[in-house]
Length: 262
Image: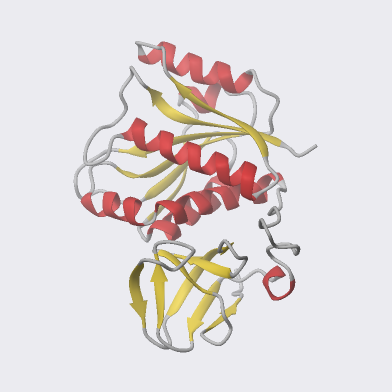
């Protein structure tokens, strides 16, 4: 049986988190729901999601969240939060108790997906969630609710963000991609079994909001280098690269993908 996970949104329906340009708890719920779907539908992941709805105090809210996590059989706990500071503050973070390597990977992946600063992994042993969950746990600070730049990046790159989070969790727990509906071959067969980190455009290409290439968001000229976050597929199984800002072609006539030494 696959290793299980629990993912939850920070704060609760009656215990507000940070509110600015974004509402922390409301956006955290959206991220939790999408990442859960990615892990259990696009990967062979098994797990649980949780949104706290009943607590009226912060202490009870935290206790309810931790109790849900500790009440499940799982190998990883994930809590989704958004940061708050001055309007100038920007970037992603991932907080940890004893999961430094995983947290660093997660923070970097979120930053690449959103196109904002990677503030890195931060040890925070005093935080209730990290201190009281009894399995390895990470607390994601997606971006700053007080930053116009971060809010725009989050709205524009929501799917890429969730795919990036899902990919890191899947890699940590050993999940693999499911078959694409209507396609008999694994989604990463052949050329796409290779791990690609970056691409260079061989001609002008568009970056699209969706995998079906219906809404173009940006065009890049020949010779542009883009970091590859993951590989996705359209409804008919056509491979797409997920890059910062959305989806682009994976056709070798138009882009050259390659790996870089870490």
